[in-house]
Image 1 (spheres, one colour):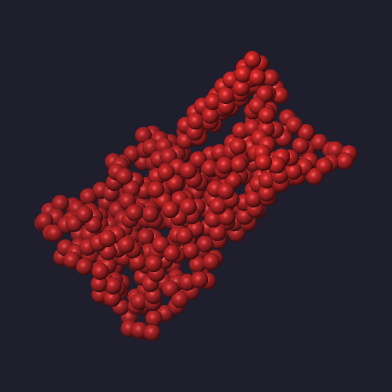
Image 2 (image 1 turned 90 degrees about the vertical axis):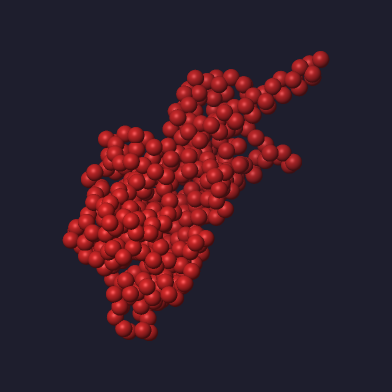
Length: 455
């Protein structure tokens, strides 16, 4: 039974690697690229981030916004990223078709330059890493599935390493044994940190991410503060993970509420009673909210300004310490602080991921975090390389040379292990049903062939 159990792990390990390796290589390389996106962007976009306009007249931020909207007539500002010196202020401008443009204002609030968000380095790396730059639910699920099966590859590799002879000294090791030894040794060393890196990235995933967030919503004591929820929108991408799906409160109803409102506030025709951005920034300062932070414009006549600081924004110069995370809502007419949700208000689950996501992204504790993540990712690529070489040394011509499947019976230990993984990673659990069905078909086919041979 033990030999059959080993072969079962070996067989599933082999097929998982065969099908998932191309995806895992893509995810690992894009992850390495994303680790250093701030360093890359600080050099690639020096003009937009740090340079000054040739126009030296001092404007207010509201005048700068108005000038940007006059320059890009089909766009209106929906978001402002107010950064610390020496970074310039970044505006997110959106047109009626949903297309976006980043516009940068210097310290005089004069226009320095603009970008197409879709093709910035950080967004390209993020899109490749999360959705292979293709997008769509199916692709997002496929990426998540690859991450889940990577967990299985690492854990099953640990089992086979200690149950097999991979690390035992051989007097005259063959080429295959040498490759297998390096594959097993390095895989064993990186399993724990790699599992942490993968799990801290799953809150962003399509299936498990929603599952985790729903759990945090339903159980405020361990998750996020109990607020009415609604689906996220693209304008919430710089809001902290723990409050991203929170429904903002409404501004005060009254005479101002009768002004023209839209699904998304077009600030070029904003209500006359709406406070200016400078007034909002003054109110944020009174509330002890210092730069860097993002400002999200109100949605409709009853919407509020959202001002937030996050530890996982994906914007160069905007990330803060998890302890400093805060999401605040200000009345768009009076500027009054309506409500505030900070790190101290999170439940244990939300706090865990508030730390875990920047750990995954490589900026939780500076350069050391980046270096550790880089070493683990490069080691993971080497593990895949030596695994591939091990397979090639035993692969027969015109054959996949899959490990043998001695019996169709599954041991209790194997079943318990897979059920636990399936419960922890629901999408992985669903995929297991398909794998079991395929195994049953192959087993039935082999039995049928053996019966025919016996006849």
